[in-house]
Amino acid sequence: MPELPEVETIKRDLQQKIVGRTILTVTPEWPGSIRCPSAEEFTRLLRGQKIEEVSRRGKYLLLRLSNERMLVIHLKMTGQLLVRGPDDAEDRFVRVRFKLDDGRELRFADLRKFGRLALYNSNMTQKGMVRETRAPYLEDFWKLGPEPLSADFTLEAFTKLIRSRSARMKSLLLNQFFLAGLGNIYADEALFKAGIHPLRKAESLTEEEIRKLYEAIKDVLVSAIGDRGTSTDNFRDTAGEPGFHQFHLYVYQRTGQPCSRCGTLIERMKLGGRSTHYCPKCQLKQEGQ
DNA sequence: CACATTGTTACCAG
DNA sequence: ACTGGTAACAATGT
Image (tube, rainbow, N blue to C red; front, side, top):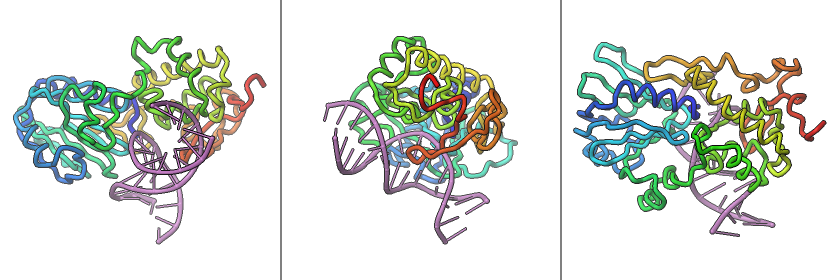
């Protein structure tokens, strides 16, 4: 379940390992991973291109190429990007292979086959650019909410955002058009740290609660990036190594275990089809009780 | 073998 | 046009 910290970890790895390299060949072993253009066109357009820059927007990885195109990657649930040398063992579930000019190989592996690669013009982040391509999943890329770790994500901006909504907080935090990068793990963790019940409505939050949540979101993400991500299941970095943040979780997948703050047993509920973990004492449904 | 998993989109009602 | 809520989908391990 790569969310912002996991994608950030991979981004930093790739910046170190593959920026400046040229793609020699592309082998689609499961062409379904390639969203657009066709697998043949994708392969042809990438061959011989230099990887100029690696960046991240929300949960999307962006690889800018020398021909002014952008390779966009979404890992969805089980996608991995592995950088391997000629003597390294084969990886399971490799869907697309990129041979590089230093003898190494970038492998896109994906057990569930939900992850997607797409190739666009590099100005695709601008309004209207991607919609013209009619590419599923990525067409409203430019509509994504603010980056929680960027300088322009201020408390004032977050307060405005919250004040413009009425939905339940857990649902809002999962909405990528509200705020980019949080998924099920970090939405639960941030709400716990801020002491806010997942079912609370945005309009019911006090100034103090908004401030606490603002800090909690940033703290949780920074801490998880420091731990190189959460590997509760199959998240791996580009060397195939797990992260460490699963040892520092407060509520996610801790159902029935004592809350580290108050000892009450962590509970689990279904919200919009998603499992939601929370401490019933630290995160009271009615504010002020 | 039905179910669980989650990020995202489709669709509907308001 | 926008928001919020629910269902559906992707594919596979258990």
